Structures are given as structure tokens and as C-alpha cells.
Amino acid sequence: MSLKNKLQDKLQELKLVLNGAASIDFPGDPDFYPNTVRWSEYAAPQPGAVINVAIESDVQKTVQWAVQNNVKFVAQTGGHGWTTTWNIGESDIIINLRRMNNVSVNSKEGYAVIEGGALVQEVIDAAYGEKTHVVVGNCNSVGACGAMLGGGFSRLQANYSMSIDNIISVRLVTATGEIITVSATENSELLWCLKGAGHNFGIVTSAVVNAFPQINGGMHWESTMVFLPDHIEEITQAINDLDMGEGMSIHYAFTGLPPFGFPAIVVELWYAGTPAAAQKAFAPIFKLSPIHQESGPIPYNKINAVLDRGQYKGGFKPTWSVALEKLDPTAARDLWKHFLNFRLRHPSSKNSVVMFECYAFGKVRQVPENTASFPWRNLNFHICASLFYTDPAIDNDAIAWGDKFRQILQDASGMRQNKVYVNYATGDESLEEIYGYDEDRLNRLRAQKAVWDPEGRFSHYHPIL
Ligand SMILES: Cc1cc2nc3c(=O)[nH]c(=O)nc-3n(C[C@H](O)[C@H](O)[C@H](O)COP(=O)(O)OP(=O)(O)OC[C@H]3O[C@@H](n4cnc5c(N)ncnc54)[C@H](O)[C@@H]3O)c2cc1C
Image 1 (cartoon, helix red, strand yellow):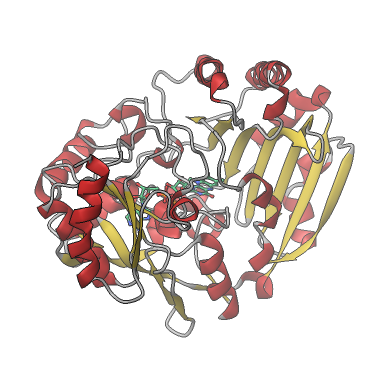
Image 2 (spheres, rainbow, N blue to C red):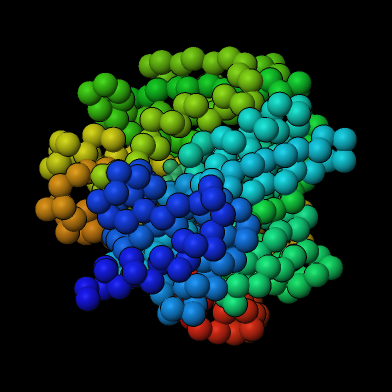
């Protein structure tokens, strides 16, 4: 019997015990591709089946079944993880959490309950409906918990710190298929691990997180500025020097303008507050000379819409990232040349992007270091490059390009050690580059991994070895 048939055969037992709203798809089934397609298909898992779980006990039963049958598995929510560390093939399964996407908000008591399979937009919509803010990622189709478990960068971190700093408790299915609560009073050492290295320890079926009253009645502010490349040095310097206070966030990108992909510089500014306060906060950026600018108020539930264009699934999008203390104008110019060079060699890669993510870290640094395993509170800028293409013949050129992208930034940084946010890591970095150079931190993570997952069932996303 082939591996594929063996898996399909074994899964018949599991099917019998799952909730009626759950289902299993195999390659070739009409729903298999929609339920497994990822943001980037570069080095993506190639599972033999996808289990579409519907309720918490389905997750538990699926994990128990997989452990008993020695089948490798990985959970999936938004499918945006771009790591190359998956190691999931035709005799393995994906546990698709998307049917567990309920979000409820208690505005009076200031908390929200997010099911493990909810996307960022679903959390934003539920929170907006209750006139609250919940700290989630900035891209609508990303999994709220997938992003949170690595840290969870958010525009709202300028006011409330990152997603991990707003966790009250989570329910977790462990490697033995037990369901446990993790909070400051129950399994608190595990909570510390989940806050930054969470993909290594279990499947979050739901999380209780803080919900805050809306800022400015839910009306925020946004500006899109387009520049010609001759301004790169002054833009980079101005953003580097800007005092990123409450309410502020910036994406500074080398990208292709729609519809033809003309390479240009786009700066997106967001502010949680009034237009007048935004003008004041971003005054040094307004002194620059864009060729186009549109600014105005925006309801918070639409705040991510401008980024939707880069979120479609399918195609190859290998991605690299470097975390930095400061930006260097000369390095930015070198990156622009490097970016153009790839675009010229591969004209079909017009949606490729180099993104300087500039979030406010003031509130993030107010949270004591020892409350979470997340290692990079002291860093200010996270620069990511994603090459978008569909022809695998480009792979080798793309990999060489990505290595040079990182080298340019690392050489210019003056930092002795390379650092990367776990959710932005490529998969070829060292443990220290991802989880920090502090031996105590790594030892605490390793010790908890040995307690909760000694056989490495949850070791497909930047595994702690
Ligand atoms: C376009 C884009 C925008 C992004 N924007 C942001 C952003 O604003 N802020 C930010 O911090 N990051 C952002 N990221 C990075 C993102 O946090 C990671 O890619 C994250 O892993 C995506 O989670 P996912 O559920 O969408 O992906 P998946 O690939 O489904 O999951 C990624 C990993 O998380 C695990 N996982 C997912 N759900 C659960 C769960 N409930 N319990 C346990 N493990 C789970 C999976 O098993 C897998 O190991 C972005 C990525 C992309 C591609």
C-alpha cells in the first residue's frame, strides 16, 4: 500500500470521532487546495491530508490520533507562515483551524476570547463592533494566534504593547493531547514560552486577551505617500530620527505601483487619533517631497485595507528579514539598487517588496523583559524582503538575492550579532538569531520543550531543538 493510501486508510478511524462539522480532505478533493494553499508556496508543506477541525475536542482527538499513529502534523490558521522549516510530506497532515474562528468581546470587563483559527480581520471586526481595540497583527488574512505566538507586531502596540503582552490566558492542546489552561497562575513558565516561542509548545484553541476602549471613537488616520527614488536617503534618515510615540506606525516600502509595477517608494503612515494630532506627530515626514499624497481619517475596521494587495495566496514568495536598532541611508540606497536589479532580471516579479516596518516600541519596552521569551524589545526596525514570482527556475537567483539583502543590512548595522523576529525568519537562521543570544533564555525554552514536547511534535516552525 502506498504511503498516501495508508494515511487515508488510517484516517477513517479519526473521521468517526470528529464533530459533524469537521471534515477531511485528500489531495485531488475539491477543497484540498483551498484548505491548504499558503501565502507562499515556496518550500511549503505538502501534506497527505488536511483535517478541518470544528471544535476544541476535534483538535485534541486529532493530536491524540496523530501521536498514536506516529503521523507528523502541523496546525494552520492563516497559512501566512513563510518558514522553510516545515518538513511535512505526503504521509503527514495539516490541522486546519479555520472553522474555529469565533471571536467574542466583553467590552464592559475589557477582554476578548479569540478562537485559535480566527484571522486578524475577524478579530478587528468583532472588536470594532463592541467599540473596543484588541491588539492583533496588521494584515487581515494572517492568523491572529499564529502571529501572536511569535510576539504579534501591531499598529496598536504604540498604545498597548504587542499581542503577547495582552494575553490573559490560553487553552492549549499539548503534545499528549491534553487540554490545559496557561496563564499567570496556571503553567506560568509555559506562558512565558508561549509569549515569543509559542509555535513550539502546542495548539492554542482559544486565547483570552485584553480589549481596550476605542481611541477617538474608532476613527484613526492614514496617509499614503509616493516618492521617486532620489529621496531614499532623506526618507530613511527622517524615519530613523522620528520620535515614534503613541498612536504612530509606518511602513516604508520599495514596491511596484499598480497596475504595471513601476518601481517606486511608498510610505504609509498610520495614527490612532485625530488628523490634527497625526499632522503634528508626523511633521518631519510631511516636510519631505512626495509625488503623490493622500491622507484622511479611516475607521479602524478598515485600517489594514491598504495592505490587502500583497496578501493573496499562491505563487512563490521567499522572504528574508533583519531586525535593527537604526536605519542607514546608504544601506537603503544599496538595497534599492539590489531590488531594481532583481526586478530588471525578472520582470514578472513586479509585486516583490522590500518593507521597512517601523512600529513604536515605547510601550513594548515598558513591559518587563522577564515576562516573555520574546527577545527583541530593544530593536526598532524590522526589514523584510519578499520576492513574488511563479517560475521555480528563479529559485536559485532568489536565494542568492535574499542572502545579499541580509548582508547589506547586517554590514551596515554596526550590530555584532544578526537578529530576526521569529515570525519573519526565513528558516536558515541559528537558534540565537531567532530566540536571542541570552543562554538563560534559551535554556528556559529548552527545559520547557523537554517537559511539554520531548518528542518534538511541535517542531515545524523555527524549532527549539
Ligand atoms: C502578508 C503578511 C503580513 C504579516 N503581518 C504581520 C503583522 O502585522 N504582525 C506580525 O506579528 N506578523 C505578521 N506576519 C507574520 C505572521 O505573524 C507569521 O507569518 C505567522 O506565522 C502567520 O500565522 P498564520 O496563522 O497566518 O500562518 P500559518 O502558516 O497558518 O501558521 C504559522 C505557524 O503558526 C502556527 N499556528 C497557527 N495558528 C496556531 C494556533 N492557534 N495555535 C498554535 N499554533 C498555531 C502554525 O502551526 C505554524 O507553525 C505577516 C505575514 C505575512 C505573510
